[in-house]
Image 1 (tube, helix red, strand yellow):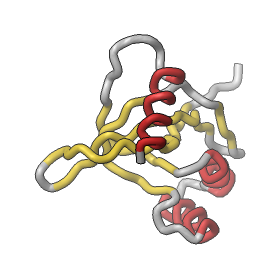
Image 2: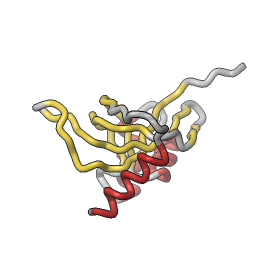
Image 3: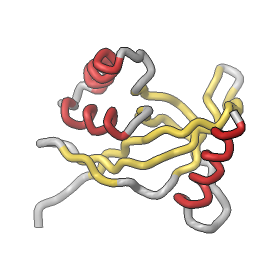
Image 4: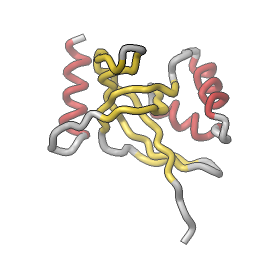
Length: 123
């Protein structure tokens, strides 16, 4: 467990600009790996739940990708993933809390990848 904490700290120090870390809260689509987020984007056709289920089934992991209500710290954008109709930024995050019936509660820091849909316009 010490190695995970060390890697999380290393991630924060190298991926987030030198400033106070801002904890953000909200609903987010998160996946465990970059391959999973890229696969999600490939098959996403406006049915979020269906795309999540396909990725999770292919990974034999019911929580590989999920829509969650979390507290997190963002890293720098890793890249952009596009399908024929959608574009997403891929952003590493460290999940530091989760929303419960009692409000946000701290959790063991977990590294995940978040997808944020963006709009692109032809110029």
